[in-house]
Image 1 (cartoon, rainbow, N blue to C red):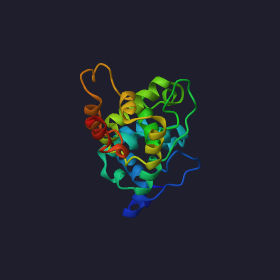
Image 2 (cartoon, rainbow, N blue to C red):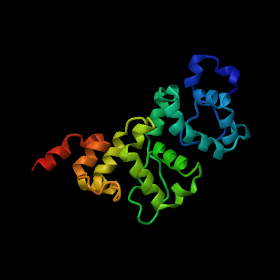
Image 3 (cartoon, one colour):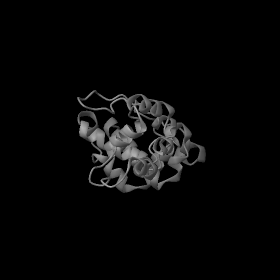
Image 4 (spheres, rainbow, N blue to C red):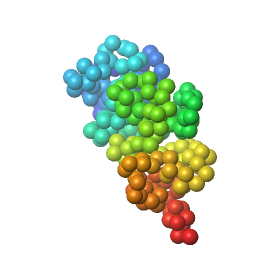
Length: 202
């Protein structure tokens, strides 16, 4: 979509037609931001028409872009796409493989300096991304709300709220913190709100 076509305010929220499929759509507002930022043009050369560059730029929009630009947080259709599940290749020892949303994948790409190998091949990277996401990265990056399917997946994966808390515990940082303190600090999952207090009351 040429920049001249984005003068209409509604075009900012419109999907851009591309000749390939991506995990989410590209929206007019994203191209406006890219056109106005030479540093982004150098970092993500979209004019070359390569899938890889668009994926990397979407990862930037989903992380730093959402934090910097309010308009990227006001596209309901994109929020729904970001909250959708994303199938990743199975890796031995990976307990999170089917509990990744599209935005969690984009967090991982951004975390790995906008490369893809870590999220596709490394259990350690996936574990680190999931831990950061549930410890509050989703709030810092102004992520859309957690989708019901993901909360249900957590319920299936972890037998209790405590086991979920243990999975995101950082030994060095959380040495003196109780499970209840970690839960309250990081607001781990909206589905469990209020339940942990009762568990610890007894």
